[in-house]
Amino acid sequence: MTASRESIGSVPAQPAWVRRPASLARAVTAELVERIVRGVHPPGTSLPPEPALCEAFAVSRTVVREAVKILQEKGLVQVRQGSGTMVTPPATWDMLDELVLTATIAEDESLAILDDLVVTRRVLESDMANVAARLAGPDTIDRLRTLVDEMDELVDDPVTYAESDRAFHDTIMRASGNRIARGVVRSLEGQVVNTARYLGRTERALCVASNQGHRRIYERVAAHDPEGAAEAMFQHITEAWIVRRDGTADPVRLRR
Image 1 (spheres, rainbow, N blue to C red):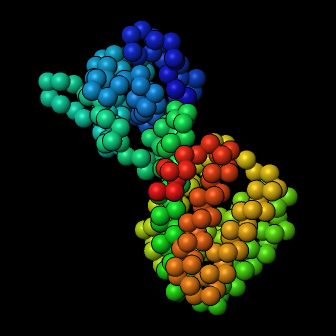
Image 2: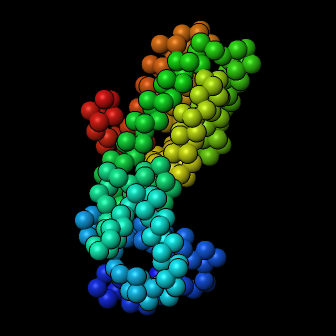
Image 3: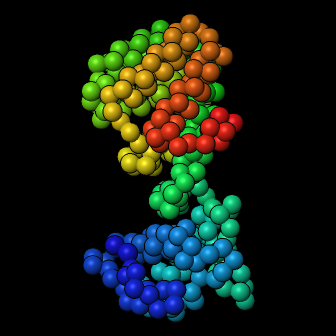
């Protein structure tokens, strides 16, 4: 649970821990991350002093100091001697951090942060598809074909279809052998895969169109066509996201 939104100045008037969290420092951190991302504490301003935070969250100085240390590790604040704890510009924030990314997505009405996430995923997965087309053996190709055929039968079941969709992409990422790129994509996807803003529309026609993209990727990998596989992946991820976000994407931003 988080502290009360009732405020005196820029901190809650009274704590509202309905159930005292097991890790108070993490709970305080999560609340402060949300406040910073929402602009309650804008970049260039100081966080409230320790005594005010201790009173607001009904925690000790040790807990507040640990929370500030975690915020600093996430790039959201910088502790300056004599100046207090300053909130840093968004450019310094760790966008791969779960708390930071989740809070940013929640506050971003334009979906620009999800556009950036999709562009990042597309760059990495297109490259991995290129490599997979060169390295994929018979087992990988058979697995991709099986998944594509399964998804043809799952277009009326978006939840199960999505599971096979993720398995398809993960098979290609595994085949590329790039564990770091796969880890980044899985981390990003894992943080947004169940959010309505990322999933967007999921009706049958979109599943059908999506699997046509999968089949083109599979065919290029099976043909050991690296450039074709990369291009098919690029188009698939771009087109699927533009449709999921209801056609409101900036085509220049997504096709850069």
